[in-house]
Image (cartoon, rainbow, N blue to C red; front, side):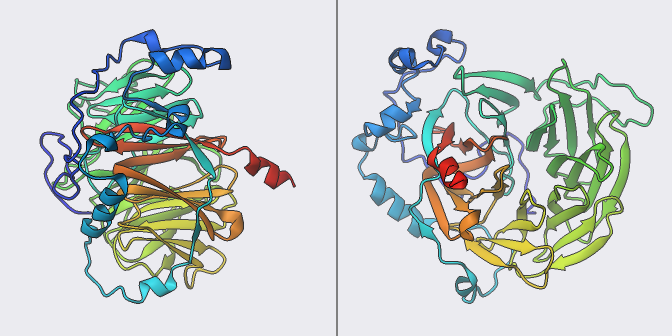
Length: 449
């Protein structure tokens, strides 16, 4: 991945994509500790909630009445939303590590029938605001239920309750962090002022990686941080990806992928380092197959690798992308792997025939920085660095799609475990927020019929 210094945790992508055209001096200030907007969300108190919620938030009802879902006051600006979108599409410059001819790429891409709506807008809040520290890493948002979302906001890991419409700080990584678990073989050490570059939340564990090669593990039901350490002293040691998974024996493991070209495996109970795998290039992303046997490895190469999860030995090489890859996800059936690349495409691979990708999906503006499948396998979502999230119906052969059109850097996307909600984090100084989309009910009827 690209190497740069990030000393002050500023919004690092301003040089690439600036939204400072928007000003909102007249909007009211928000007190995140004010509970006046927290009501029981029964139908008989919806009107009260509409009156008491912060003016910067947007509900589905307000959106139906014409309010912009991000609260951008287009009527007060010197241009319309459509005109600004047109300008963005013309001026946006996708970041590339490798400049290669891409004329043939369009011919490979599947023609998508956009216009479907699988997930309807439900709510947008600025009480919590996503942030990012590296413009190529966008896995900073995770939903553990349709009511519980975890995201990074500067130096804080925040929990958002979509039921209570309230945010709460789970962990502050600016302060000194001392690991509470003392086990033989554990490499735990104190840390402070950690810039979180990537995170995941599963199995009641929050695992985060840092800009200087840190790893932090917190049990969400216990106070403090169970384990934290700096994994490497390499000068360019950023932790690019973390994962929580069960190995083929059913044991819970933690995986960390770093810019030093190593993948490290940890025991999720005592946090002992069990294994280290080394590859030819910086590892930007990893993901483990649903059966816990295969490991997808993506990094500073046009090739993606499949390896045995226990030994790290490469068993297959996937060829087709034209630039570096930063995102991957497995379909729940374990037969399809999706890989997102800076060449602006997501490739779908059938592990039963890896000679070439089975499908190539293209974004509107930029690299594919995040990819997720819903737990039932019905939908796949992919996010560009800014402005666009694409949702595909897998049962249509990825032909039918929904394009979610926003403005701002995308810090992460996440389906809820029951696939009923899709959350999108927007990183922007003015319009940084968390958006919630809810699955249309008729999709369930279609699947029954």
